[in-house]
Length: 449
Image 1 (tube, helix red, strand yellow):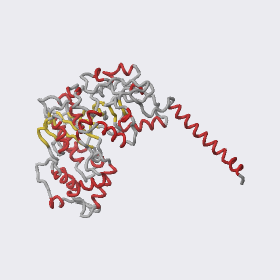
Image 2 (cartoon, helix red, strand yellow):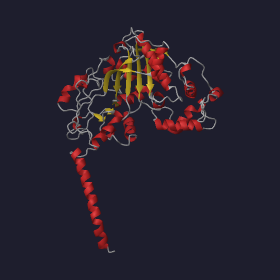
Image 3 (cartoon, rainbow, N blue to C red):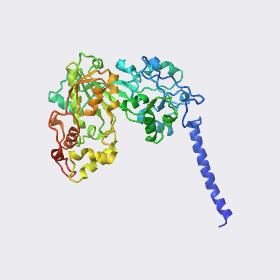
Image 4 (cartoon, rainbow, N blue to C red):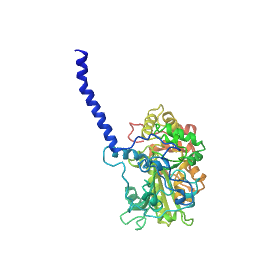
């Protein structure tokens, strides 16, 4: 076969490939007619951010948080990142497959909060709230003029109400722990609850100060460990707000939300970090679900006694290490020489993840300040990190409540005794040395502990 013949036989294939590339480029051009903007700079032509003054006294002085890269808004952005937290990726997929137009604007009619919360003094204190937008639930009320002018402002907080139906609550009613009062617990055994969903909105100078680190270091670490997804963390030091692609939180309020800041009303509270395996599917290797159910019962009971109960549920799966890492640690714990012992509980996590816990509770109290919390009468948690963060932020905790012994699954004793030995609150004995090593979990092939 001659060279000329080879070239001739390849030409149709090359032409076909070029046609495919041109077709793909045309599809991209149809979705996104403007040029690609990889990053922006403070002095760049067309860059004129909407003024944003974190901690200002009023929403008008503070200004809206604007992160959209919509063609009409990109020059007005005053925040880095994208709305929706981790769900922004699904929005991108919806646009790519044609299920959603890139320039869709939400219709916010009838979406207003079902209950009035705040405002409180902490909302305008840049020291108290640095990880959420205190005005994120009221953009229509306070920033409608910007929306009408075409600025793509999105809510980051929503407030609604619902009924909860849980088999465990039915059991609590049958045992007399709760009763059907028709207010907190309906005659059908459902819990009436006010729910608040919040997405993360980080004021970078405030976050850096909260952790005692340099803002430039924080920006570089966020840039590097998100795969360079957000170059404006580096190129736009004038943009102080970042919407990180992480899970948010949900607040469940039992009773009247207006009672939360009322010093004459008792408040029972749990701050709970997500554990899908236990919370949803009932894994018995930890105390997460039993503690969560117990806290819901106690919060509802407090509300029935004239106070109010609050459960805050953070999306920090596996101590914010993630579920894959958590399961790898489970494997290592069960396979290690000597079995799954409390003495080695944290070591196995550190061997896999390099750190035993990445929840870093320093930002956690922000939602409590947003709710107007000044005092927690009963804090249903044994965590020293949560306690220290809350008290350190200026909120009083009157009583700490540990999980009752009879609520602990047998295999979870490894976790709870290891945490108590590490500083978690308890009114009981603290295992050390040989006694800690003797606390041992079930092997995989054991039916009963």
